[in-house]
Length: 318
Image (cartoon, rainbow, N blue to C red):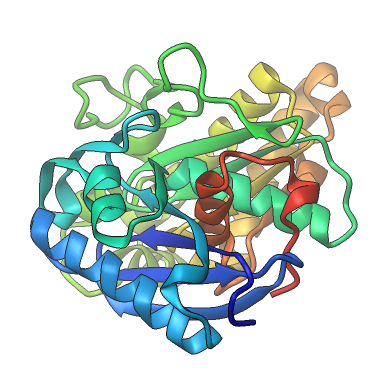
């Protein structure tokens, strides 16, 4: 593959960077993961190290890389590559695109990580033969947000806020959200909010909540019901506002697998039973879960780096 133009995508997370390199035929030629460095300097160093590592694994020279795309948490200006308030990796403000481009001598584009994952999830769907036109990727992690893809392109909205469903209040009497409102979707279903409400320690508090609920703990049952209620509310919002064909669930909370899906399906079924209109939308059949270990976020970043091509231009089979 030496000498052939390649594209690199990186998903920068709180603990690791997931990097892929995509060859001209659309296949993932290599994939590596490195621990994320802390702070602006640490992030820059790790991104550069990840680009070199994934190129080495693919057997190509960095000079063969046509573009680099980066998905990263925080507030991102996709036009400048500037990142603000990525607090879980210690970044307050960073001109990430300029820093990486100067170091590697290649075009670099930066996007919010959830939006990048949405684009990657859509491309994977189409690569699998599903010719859907619209999708929402709903990230269930520390917080809640969605990436919306319409016609194969990200829908960012007028100010980049499209998909920020986590701070829609669905229960004015519900738990307080960190944004200052009550009963936000994120206050009900976000991993951080659940851990704070549970407040019993443990490395995997959401899993502990589900296990305790199975054992009959009344407070755990309440938290588990709230999680399903919040996720179902987000699904309804995404379908009723953007009428996406599919809502794909991803993020750390989805490690619960079928236990989570069953709860969400039950919540959606209850609303469908109460409303002929909601029943007509077939919401239960429009929700699915991203496969564990999927490269969607890094692949989406590679698409971002290639300046948002149509998915047909970069379809992966990795």
